[in-house]
Image (cartoon, rainbow, N blue to C red; front, side, top):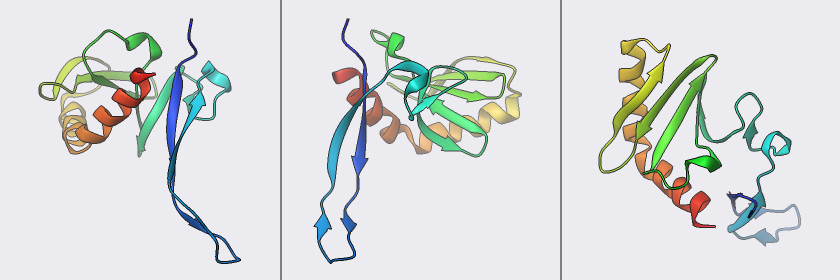
Length: 122
Protein backbone atom coordinates (compact mmCIF):
# COMPACT_ATOMS: atom_id res chain seq x y z
CA UNK A 1 0.00 0.00 0.00
CA UNK A 2 1.32 3.43 -0.96
CA UNK A 3 1.98 5.90 1.89
CA UNK A 4 -0.36 8.93 1.62
CA UNK A 5 1.40 12.23 1.03
CA UNK A 6 0.65 15.73 2.26
CA UNK A 7 1.91 18.55 0.07
CA UNK A 8 3.05 21.81 1.62
CA UNK A 9 3.95 25.08 -0.03
CA UNK A 10 7.17 26.71 1.15
CA UNK A 11 7.00 30.43 0.50
CA UNK A 12 9.78 32.64 -0.76
CA UNK A 13 12.11 33.63 2.05
CA UNK A 14 14.74 36.35 2.12
CA UNK A 15 17.80 35.32 4.10
CA UNK A 16 19.96 37.70 6.12
CA UNK A 17 22.64 37.61 3.41
CA UNK A 18 20.11 38.82 0.86
CA UNK A 19 19.73 35.49 -0.94
CA UNK A 20 16.22 34.40 -1.77
CA UNK A 21 14.69 30.94 -1.51
CA UNK A 22 11.90 30.62 -4.06
CA UNK A 23 8.47 29.16 -3.53
CA UNK A 24 8.25 25.43 -4.06
CA UNK A 25 5.84 22.59 -3.44
CA UNK A 26 7.18 19.75 -1.32
CA UNK A 27 5.64 16.37 -0.58
CA UNK A 28 5.73 15.03 2.95
CA UNK A 29 4.77 11.46 3.90
CA UNK A 30 1.77 11.07 6.15
CA UNK A 31 2.35 8.53 8.95
CA UNK A 32 -0.70 8.96 11.16
CA UNK A 33 -0.11 10.66 14.51
CA UNK A 34 3.64 10.97 14.00
CA UNK A 35 3.24 13.64 11.32
CA UNK A 36 3.34 17.31 12.32
CA UNK A 37 0.44 18.11 9.96
CA UNK A 38 -1.80 15.55 11.58
CA UNK A 39 -4.46 16.09 14.19
CA UNK A 40 -3.48 13.74 17.03
CA UNK A 41 -7.04 13.26 18.28
CA UNK A 42 -8.58 12.10 15.00
CA UNK A 43 -5.77 10.99 12.66
CA UNK A 44 -7.12 13.65 10.30
CA UNK A 45 -4.63 15.70 8.26
CA UNK A 46 -5.56 19.30 8.97
CA UNK A 47 -5.68 21.65 5.98
CA UNK A 48 -7.08 24.69 7.83
CA UNK A 49 -7.69 25.86 11.39
CA UNK A 50 -10.09 28.68 12.17
CA UNK A 51 -10.67 29.35 15.84
CA UNK A 52 -11.65 26.07 17.49
CA UNK A 53 -12.46 24.40 14.15
CA UNK A 54 -10.18 21.92 12.37
CA UNK A 55 -10.82 21.25 8.68
CA UNK A 56 -9.40 18.17 6.99
CA UNK A 57 -9.96 14.80 5.39
CA UNK A 58 -8.88 11.19 5.82
CA UNK A 59 -6.79 9.01 3.52
CA UNK A 60 -9.69 6.54 3.61
CA UNK A 61 -11.90 9.17 1.90
CA UNK A 62 -10.40 8.21 -1.46
CA UNK A 63 -13.13 7.16 -3.89
CA UNK A 64 -15.69 9.51 -2.36
CA UNK A 65 -16.68 12.83 -3.93
CA UNK A 66 -14.66 15.81 -2.62
CA UNK A 67 -15.68 16.84 0.88
CA UNK A 68 -14.27 18.37 4.05
CA UNK A 69 -14.53 17.12 7.62
CA UNK A 70 -14.81 19.65 10.44
CA UNK A 71 -13.99 18.89 14.06
CA UNK A 72 -14.42 20.87 17.22
CA UNK A 73 -13.87 18.96 20.45
CA UNK A 74 -16.35 16.06 20.21
CA UNK A 75 -18.41 17.70 17.46
CA UNK A 76 -18.17 16.55 13.85
CA UNK A 77 -19.51 17.67 10.49
CA UNK A 78 -18.92 16.75 6.88
CA UNK A 79 -19.67 19.03 3.92
CA UNK A 80 -19.69 18.02 0.25
CA UNK A 81 -17.62 20.45 -1.84
CA UNK A 82 -18.85 19.50 -5.31
CA UNK A 83 -20.99 20.25 -7.25
CA UNK A 84 -22.09 22.64 -4.50
CA UNK A 85 -21.37 23.05 -0.79
CA UNK A 86 -23.92 21.13 1.26
CA UNK A 87 -24.02 19.38 4.59
CA UNK A 88 -23.50 15.61 4.37
CA UNK A 89 -23.85 14.85 8.10
CA UNK A 90 -23.09 16.22 11.54
CA UNK A 91 -22.88 15.21 15.19
CA UNK A 92 -23.41 17.54 18.15
CA UNK A 93 -23.24 20.84 16.24
CA UNK A 94 -26.10 23.29 16.79
CA UNK A 95 -27.92 24.53 13.67
CA UNK A 96 -26.61 28.10 14.03
CA UNK A 97 -23.05 26.74 14.18
CA UNK A 98 -23.62 24.60 11.08
CA UNK A 99 -24.85 27.67 9.19
CA UNK A 100 -21.66 29.51 10.18
CA UNK A 101 -19.52 26.54 9.20
CA UNK A 102 -21.22 26.33 5.80
CA UNK A 103 -20.30 29.98 5.17
CA UNK A 104 -16.67 29.22 6.06
CA UNK A 105 -16.65 26.20 3.74
CA UNK A 106 -18.13 28.27 0.90
CA UNK A 107 -15.44 30.95 1.42
CA UNK A 108 -12.63 28.35 1.37
CA UNK A 109 -14.15 25.90 -1.13
CA UNK A 110 -11.51 26.42 -3.84
CA UNK A 111 -8.69 26.01 -1.29
CA UNK A 112 -10.26 22.80 0.06
CA UNK A 113 -10.69 21.40 -3.48
CA UNK A 114 -7.04 22.17 -4.26
CA UNK A 115 -5.87 20.42 -1.09
CA UNK A 116 -8.19 17.46 -1.84
CA UNK A 117 -6.77 17.09 -5.37
CA UNK A 118 -3.17 17.38 -4.17
CA UNK A 119 -3.68 14.82 -1.41
CA UNK A 120 -5.47 12.21 -3.49
CA UNK A 121 -3.53 12.74 -6.75
CA UNK A 122 -0.50 10.84 -5.36
